[in-house]
View (cartoon, rainbow, N blue to C red):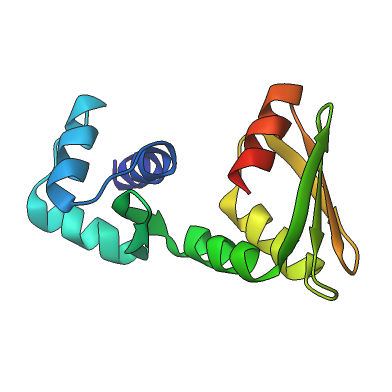
Length: 137
């Protein structure tokens, strides 16, 4: 039960902007999980979720998402897609760190990444998925 709830929490915060434990509790109830505030608080701590400020306000992100956001904002030079392929250009020496952060995020659409010194090459399931990830990055 706990692992299913944790998986649902991670999916929810990845797909939606959730800014409070009350909101998270409601979203979980919408997908069939009943949990108390103390359970949600413990889940947030165990999953290493943090509130991060975005242009639209605050939202929960997983530690790996926070790491990816910081890595991308500091090191991403460009992002391009061609068909179902995504190419990320980084500052010299940073491609491996970016690729590792992407792998830790376990994006459903990404089949795999290969990194060099300043380039990350990702194979994505669909053309549309590659474009969406390019826009996100």
